[in-house]
Image (cartoon, rainbow, N blue to C red):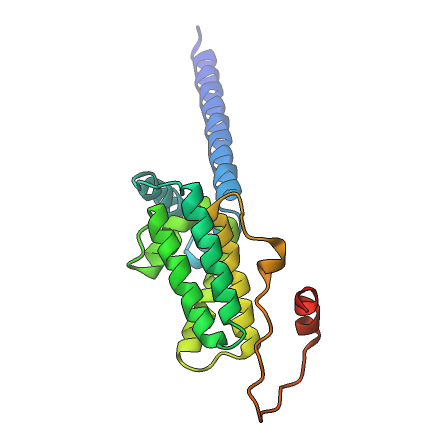
Length: 211
């Protein structure tokens, strides 16, 4: 074998290895995008590079694999579903308290499933591995909950918070026992002697099936 032939063989091997590596990286990237969905793009935008973002997502997968997640019994699922209906009914008279109760109920469900709940960012990271499709709802609900604690959230925002909480809540329950008509909380009552604010088009549409 001549020197030229040897060099060509080495080059060919390197090309094959490079192609194999490219295919492997592309397959792994598609897997991350498929698993994390919108969360993949969010993390990429937050990090300095795509490679760093993908390392973070793989690290989330590793930490998630160490959790001892627990499925809910049928009895427990029914109990949580009933508790959620009580939260939504509470919205009629006390929207702010209902959102606080909703946040507490979702947090309790997260803990019962086996996820840590001490640190919000850590909680989000763990949930993103299996519940990425509803994680945006949870983030939005949590933001409104914090504004509610500061007295800055409107009634419509509080209604949206419960809708957002419900998305993750149902996802965590599994085979959703919540009825479709329970996806929206009831319209809060107007206290005697006060005037109701202007009704938005979205409000009438959202509550049309609850009248």
